[in-house]
Amino acid sequence: MASSSNNRSMESRTGRTNQRYNTKGERLVAGVVPLSADKTYVLMIQSTRRKGWVLPKGGWEMDEECTQAAEREAWEEAGIVVQIDYDLGEIEDSRPPKKRSKEKERSLFQFYEATVTSEADDWPEKDKRERKWFTYAEAWEHLKDRPELQSALKRSTMKR
Image (cartoon, rainbow, N blue to C red):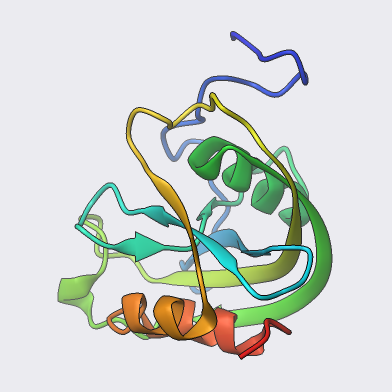
């Protein structure tokens, strides 16, 4: 795998062979609410499946701790290095089946509040995604169709 000077992989992990599932068959997903140091802005990324902004998140794999998965997803999807500050807890997947991914599986989200410590000019999914800083009100509006992501944002200590 190619890697950048900071020793982070420049290739995104793909596939579900190492994906974790709980006993109910829910896919375990780790994510971050990446905040500016002063907690006035949240960094969001362009979704690859639909036109819209989302929080960095993705599958928690067998060879990593949940916090490591969240940090990896922040790097792969947004090109950011983060410091995990708070565990925001588990969030149930509240989307109806037709709104979920192609696989129609339910997810169980584990989100963390994190401070962005650096933004790279190049990252694994740079060609697939944009990233942008938003205020709380702007982010809330962009996440209106994603109640599980709104819940993570609401649980954070971001300034309203």
